[in-house]
Image 1 (cartoon, rainbow, N blue to C red):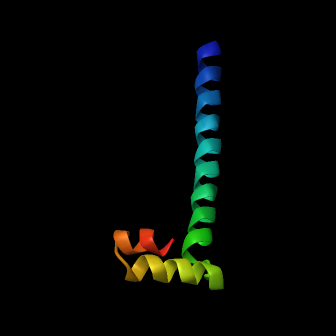
Image 2 (cartoon, rainbow, N blue to C red):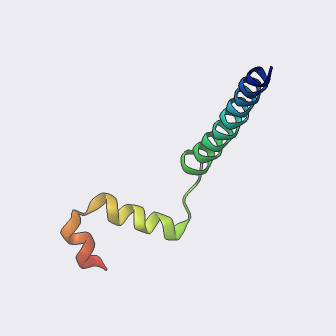
Length: 60
């Protein structure tokens, strides 16, 4: 009987963790792929996109 309770508790924990990580992944998706860049973020993006590593280091 005790073994059945442990298995049941383990399964409910798996379901809770799966729901938590699914919610976390959804939040990360919204934050990074739907987020519009602001002016200061655009500048960093264009510097990184248009220059090679040496030019980026010399930019700073």
